[in-house]
Amino acid sequence: MKAIVMSSFGGPEVLELGDRPVPVDRPGWVTVELRASALNWHDVLVRQGRYGSALPHTPGADGAGVRTDTGEEVVVLPSLFWGDRTDAPGPDFDILGDHHPGTYADAVTVPEECLAPRPAGYSWEEAAALPLVGVTAYRALVTRAGLTAGESLLIIGAGGGVATMGVALGRAVGAQVFVTGSSESKIARARESGAAGGVRHGDDAWPEHAKRLSPGGQGFDVVLDPVGLWDKSVQALRPGGRLVVLGANVAEQAPMDVRSFYFGQYSLLGTTMGGPADFRGLLDLVAGGRVDPPMIAESHPLGSARLAHERLEAGGQFGKIVLTP
Image (tube, rainbow, N blue to C red; front, side, top):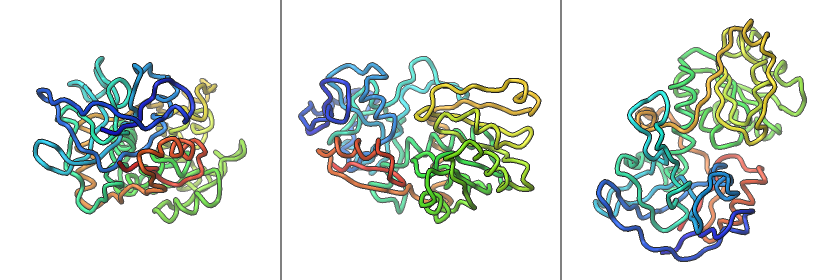
């Protein structure tokens, strides 16, 4: 079968179209003929060698397609071997495309528990773009932060996949959602998707600018930071608010003022991708018609994975980038 094969780690140029063996059926696993695969920033880290994937390797966490055993149309949950606990993944947890061949291919094989029916009304591209950002945003906002109807939410970094899904999920649970963005155009796009407003985060004073948008100007109940700007994001919270963090593509270290943190009675919640229980909760919201499909920014053929990664790293798109075999 055709697949993107990495023979070394590095820049987008290591993503080459090649041939890999068709997945072999084994007990408890199912092969899916893929109709679309979606890109995530996590794929960039895999390509760079951050997760020590064995070479040669096929990356890719997100996908949607057809089960070869039943013919059902499905989406793939990228969380492998989550374990029995819901508060954190178990010791064997892995992400599809890290140490198992991923979705940048004609087909992929995964544990059967990682499959769910394609949501009604979703295109193949939208279905492929849902699982990783959807389950990640759901776990962050609902499972970890406990966001509820009537609360206020600020999402850092309008335009990214998790951020755009966060707007949709925030609205789905009845929260009032605001964003920060690198440009007025991205903020405008977020407003079109349901955000109540936003501010640019190009200067150090952006947390104060954002707080003025919050109810009563007191700060937000929840701030979702998928980029690593904890020291700034916490300043946009109301006293007793919750900061939920899940990424570090802008900053990998954040100096925090400890005294003001505990006097503010803040909660700092770390999270990553969710597991099967989070996925079921997400799909319940989707089935109820409360979650808009992921926004698709661009679609490229599988053989153009290098170009797709270049576009992803350039960061100018609003929404998800998708590959189609």
